[in-house]
Length: 505
Image (tube, rainbow, N blue to C red; front, side, top):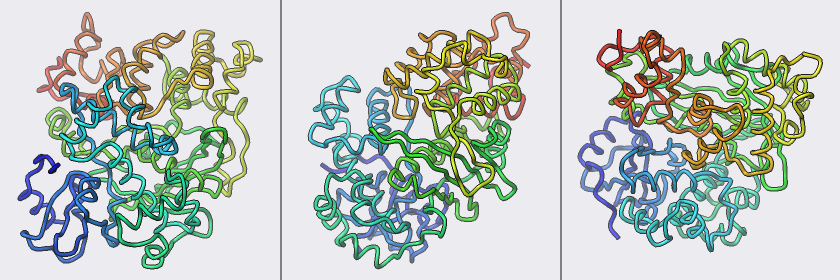
């Protein structure tokens, strides 16, 4: 099937000529004379217009027979997200691609993956395939194969992981299948590609680069994390580096290590370094960090809706979390108290229940408590000796959250079913709409979350004296859909909302 005509080819060519990083990942240029496809930021000689074809997704270009450029490396591009809250097919595609983009699902058998994904989304396998074909011109499995191959290509180029391990961590069931797919798509075997590009592992840990679209207010993002960091678990230093310890439970194995992220603003890239203990789950680490730092946001689409109300917030991102469970616990701790007070409680929780870890960094010494640890801690243990100071209602909420994650499969990441997860959270003791929406905004990566009952938001919107501030805030926020999570961050940052939003002065 021919790809749907969803983009303006002439506009894409103008963007290609500009090499503007704002368009990175929004389309790919395939050159018919070379058989290669590139990012808009590629610095090779600009091809002639008649030799160019344009695709919204890398999977479309590869399905049409083009190979990824070895210079601009399409695997570094931020992913494209078309968000909608009204178009049923668009919403279905959103949820399906979010699930397929998550490396934790790549190790499942592909034989019935389409059926399982369709069942999870509440549609038939046939309907899901039809939506993919109509919207992006490839099947779900073809889309998934491109994600796996581009991940493998990045690991081959940036790390010294053995090729066998690259194949396995990229979701291929065998090296033979990996080699065959790689050669079929890229006309090279993995060894040839690694020989052409070379590897760039550092002496301490494994280093990869991740792209993002400007504008990105790096200082604001790091300030947000700095204000909330827990000593021993995370740090933000003067070199604009963000570091954190991390536990990743994949299947029956638990991986414990650290990561350091440093912004390279001149290239619109993030340099990520991870410990050797996390090399086996590097695709999952990359996926989590992209979400935590909101690297896949599309500022153009967001600013088109929000710039009028928040003209100073065009570079702001919604900070996420490397660990959705940690974020949820901290959201509970932050109910109805200041950020500083919540941070103090979180520090006490880590000091009491966090696991020590050895790292090369003096600022990284502990892991956030595991769900299984807090699930076994009764209310008396959480409040023993009066050290933690967590009230009983929040003790119950933390234990219920921990049990939900550890035992009942409560998923707190971007591939979760957002409405179902919000409902499940609100069914837990001590968790209301504000906490559920905050978790959806930061842990579930839902761009349209809106904690209508937030007092600071009411003040920013000039609604603190309103008779029904939450109701009026909800009504005023409709103009910001589907980017209300970003509107909340901008309101908190600016402290006010411009009059044209409809909020009272």
